[in-house]
Length: 525
Image 1 (spheres, one colour):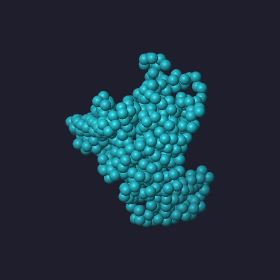
Image 2 (image 1 turned 90 degrees about the vertical axis):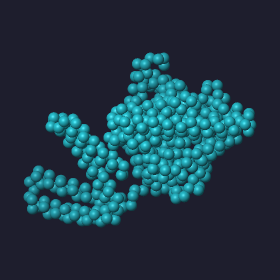
Image 3 (image 1 turned 90 degrees about the horizontal axis):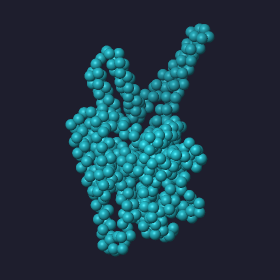
């Protein structure tokens, strides 16, 4: 690796972005979950000897580089983007299952994995609970990307995303306590337990305070401006500032950035952001999150190949089994008393609790002289790989098997009618084309066209009846039409300004009105 050769580092970074973007584009085109595709391709690239990519692999798999890129560079952006777009009303509506999973399930899983690892694998207490903390963090990116492609219930997606946002913060706190303070607390006995509890409360509370104060302050700041490029810069400063400030005072940076982004995206959007600003901030962070996730999962694939699994299968298989059992017990136990929560959703949440980049970044941050570091590294990487590939690839089948991805009532019938109508309209168009080319008389063609038109009329009556029976179908279609109409209006204004027919001031005014309507449509659907 070229030390401090910034030009060389930039070139390697650009190559990484190009590879990640290419794989993501192909996966999206094939309608496959891109995070899993990136991990698989990253692992393949890591295993195959490609001389031109050796400098990139050496650079990326450097422990300090990987840790910096995941935790400092991308984690605040990914957490901030997810929390920014999460409506507080959705969190409030689902607070019981989210809190039960984020706190109850995380702590229960931590304890089960910790004690089981001591008993089954013979790990020391610190090593066992460090591994337990790593396995407490869930990564919803793969699951949410699958949910979007199959149209899963929004409430279920909100619960999974809400759990991940808060349990990541809890997992990081548990990891730091286990790695650096646990032995000291154990030696002190009851007093040590008190110190441990106080440290736990202090780290989380301080994270909440810092995130809350900065989120409120930046929300107020945006109310003095109506300038979306500047407000995007404010959001960048807020996400990274809250994370780094909390870490500097040994608080939870993860919790700080989640709370700050939630306040900024809800309270700040309400008091200080125009619809144009909301749309542009959301678009900016959506692009940033896609780029960050693409690079992160490719890096995970590359990093996994650096681990030597030989002669470690006696650790790997029991570790995977322990994590799966602990996840199952903790999910079903924590949701046991939650009312009106379908059993099928519990199964999805259990199997969808994937482990990801945060677990790998944390284990790589362990000091080189930490006892049991190599064993923790191996089993953590193995569980993450199993989780992303086997669980990630099978979640779609599980959704279908449990019927969780069933489309709303009447949708299948509607699709059949639309397909048939499109067939008949295409047939009529083709008849007109052939008639002109082959000089077929109008008398001959009109008879066939009339038959198709009668079929179309009958279909239209059926569709109207379906709209009466299922009004949401009509609303969805109207929403699609309204969006396309607004996009056309936006393009029309662009054309007028390019031809100097209207001024920039009038164009901006019209664009803002169009954007306002688009935002309202997004909020309704």
